[in-house]
Image 1 (tube, rainbow, N blue to C red):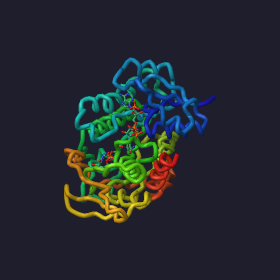
Image 2 (image 1 turned 30 degrees about the vertical axis):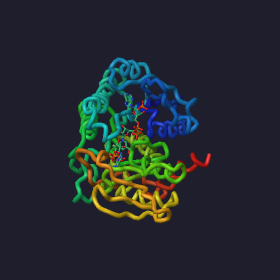
Image 3 (image 1 turned 45 degrees about the horizontal axis):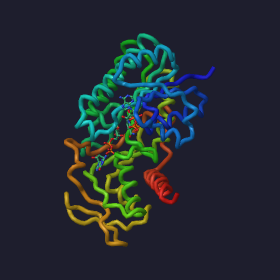
Length: 340
Ligand code: NAP
Ligand code: G4F
């Protein structure tokens, strides 16, 4: 019989890639999706799998639908990917972010504990929980957590509560502490997609200069499609555990911009300092990137670089896509839209 998996947040970047992956493993895939007026399954459509998954109405703020779905579904595996996942907005919506990310996770765990004890549970934890200080070399499973945003602290609650349900109630709970991962399916407000979209708009549609915030924070960026397989692998182990998933490399936002500029066909040159720093295209002498104070966060995670030794050793996993390949595939996908 086919295994049954529920993916919460199926309309998001990781949800879509994970659904594609589990279908390739012959799973019956159920997707939790909250009701929206316009419908939001464009990523599943882009991957050509929208007819292959069964969509269930799923709202993380609501206990009743969660209990019903978990009780009736008796899933082999539940992947909790749904979240208010944008760090920037979590400063404006701290209560909502906590309700969805922290208590939403608890609602699912409680439902599993009461109605479906053998269901394996994956929690989408995040490198944001580390808070990444400038003088750290890397972060791994034993690094200290110092969350710097309402988002990070809500995810830390979800991370610990999953640990507690694993230890206290013997549930099979795994948390993947994933570092940033991007793709052509990334949401528009995240910095990588914003850069690629903004630069292509300037190149192909006479767009205005791209405006960004702090270009000196560092991130460990991987390719989302490489990262979903590991969520599944964690749930196939004999014992549940938590794992850092990362590339082990770190780069500034400025480096990302410079590489994307070159791929898209600009010759970037930075001038000025602080809020007056600007990037010019030497080919056309146009300003292409400016700094805008409004994109700075009240508190910033300065440095993220994951040590993925444990995942390499126990799960026999390693990332396949390099930093430059990742930027290239995001740029090429965006350029295609203009060429079409
Ligand atoms: P994403 O594209 O923002 O997707 C988030 C998903 O959660 C969407 O399907 C969204 O639905 C759904 N959602 C939001 N609020 C909900 C609610 N109240 N009830 C039900 N569903 C709700 O995020 P992602 O990049 O795929 O990330 C997947 C998970 O991994 C998230 O939990 C994120 O925090 C975590 N994570 C991501 C990264 C990364 O770099 N991508 C790194 C570490 C951890 P709508 O489409 O309706 O908004
Ligand atoms: O792309 P970002 O918004 O991603 P962030 O904050 O690192 O969070 C992402 O990765 C986490 C894993 O570490 C996930 F848990 C989370 O759900 C999300 O997927 O910002 C990256 C960096 C930040 O330092 C930000 O301050 O880029 C900087 N940045 C500079 N200008 C900007 C901008 N970020 C955004 N979104 N927009 C800007 O204009």
